Figure (cartoon, rainbow, N blue to C red):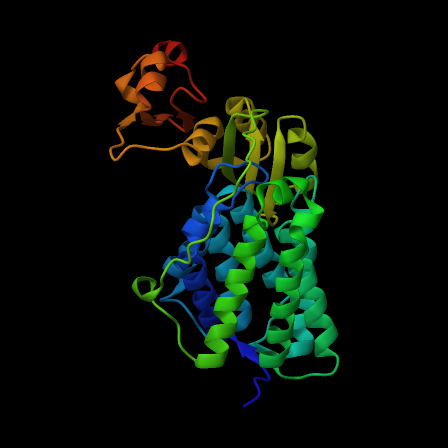
Length: 360
């Protein structure tokens, strides 16, 4: 039976099925993560982004596709983590912006939304790179548009778009030398294809697998990985305000670091950046709106953890233990930064506020 329209319920179920597939593959995605930084968290970040959508909207789904797509976009922004998570969130934001105020949409109308999703994903990055998740999204969108010209069945349209996305995924090592050297495809691009495969499986079978019923597909992890040390912290925040000027924000933070992604719309954005000075970045963001959910992960530590052997026991402490850094390094301790609040001012212990500044 042909599928000639999408409504809110069908959109939600498709996204939910895609989520399950990504969740089942998160450890593999972590293993092949080498770009932009080999910190082994792409699968975790993508899964967290998608899981936030499921958690936030599963009890609020309606038949109105525009309303559901907006909830998906808002939830993705709230849950977005890392470079891949932020791009995924912007994909959903663009998709939502391309869906008109209707209860359901036709393939022709979906083409508009798919193109908007692709364009928005590119616009979110300061320096878009081919051979990444962006390339696969673009090829998928272009295929949806091409096939829809002679087909009115979502099942056939999405199936063809998935096949072209797989081909684009296989080509990513030819576009990025770091992937070719490591012998892997781009992890974010693989995650997006996994998402599409989950959707197609649901369309074909009518069933959405549960977490516990999915087996992680094991493959060789990335080889010949060169650890990168240009920037230390993978830094993120959510910014809220009225008529946020994303162009002005981009200009203000462009010299604060690299791998910059600004996802969102006029009233809420999620910003991702690799930087050596998270405090300076957060202070700059506060000039444009309210800054929430600040995060700064030590990528140098993450890269080392991802590509070295470990024992059977790990010791995790929080930063308030105030152990000397040489002892932390020698013992391989994992330190979780404490969040500090002084009124409405928020800090990350020993990342955006030193111990000396705290006592002062």
